[in-house]
Image (cartoon, rainbow, N blue to C red):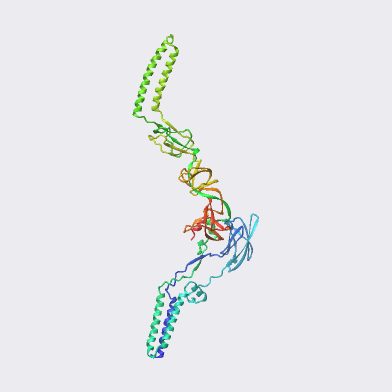
Length: 560
């Protein structure tokens, strides 16, 4: 083969190798995952804060929207007078609603950096909040495939792991060309044709490898992140939460500045509600018998009763032998009554003539009267029933009385409780000294308790402690289980926050949200200890002087 043909083959091989490099960006190839969209605030905004106020200014549609809140509580400030120093002069803000104000800002349509001064006046006090509002220019031209090798695009590609892979392909193609040149240099004249064929084959293999590596393949490159503009609440990549002031108004987000303080140690005890021993009672039968209702029937559950009310009757049953004995006694009494009556009749005839002493006549009359009373008492035993009477005022808490039911002696027929006077019996597994007032938590409600006393005998390895429920007891019933938070004399130092400030993370860790900026919130894992029914003590994980969300934390945790 001549030198001309050899040179031609080398040129063709080089062209084929370089054609493979051109396949990097041909249509239909997938060089990575789709761009991940990260939303940022769409409207230009700036914020400023003092010890009293927190202000956010937002430029939109030729107007400047102003959100004014209390710095410590994040509560909207309504009814304030706001004067704004703008590029066109001093302008008074117009109050809208719920701590929102606005001014006309035609200058906000031009890109640039604007220094603004807000003077807030309320309750004869004034505060100055300066800030700088940046209006960005037109968006930069997006990168295209034709400009991929620009310096900025190259830097972005290297950052995302794209350029590294494609440069390897380029180096491979150049290496193939150099290998072909070396092969031709060392080939003898009789082997020129073989060497040229090898160069063409190598170029073809590299071309097909590169093409197959691109066509339809997913190289799992991390695509550049696309940035979109949204002015809505959203979870940020670092785990924080962006919530615009308009959304904070809807969610009613409130904060509290944390301060360390000394609190009395609180212990958490299991307990249950019991009736006040001085305002409850049992209705029991002293003898066994059959129940029968009083006038109006048996009282229903929850029926108010007064002390002394008849709730039921118990009729003692008569055995056959008892009935026989009673009939025998009745017969004997009837016989004695008949004899005494006849004797009395004779004495009444003889008494006027003096044949019978008057004293004997009176004794006979008394004997007859006693016999009749004994006879009547036997009849009464068979007819009368025992009345079951309410021992205290209250309501029927328990009762299973049914007409005709047989009851045993000392069995409880009714349980009467005063619902306005309830106690709590808590169980402690250690001796607690210096107990003071406590609180009980049940179904999200808290009730104040007053200490009444504790036992000196263990009950199932625990010590019973009694508390009286103060105030309204509506919705409570005897037997309910409660959690008692009892305060002792021991002291501990920490940061107290409401229980509503705590949320539970996916890993089960207790978390509070810190208000790090006007529209930014960060999750802070904390370790807590019980304090009372409404608050907890943060023992670790949060520093003093931070703003913690105490209302709406659950809503922030749901933002994705």
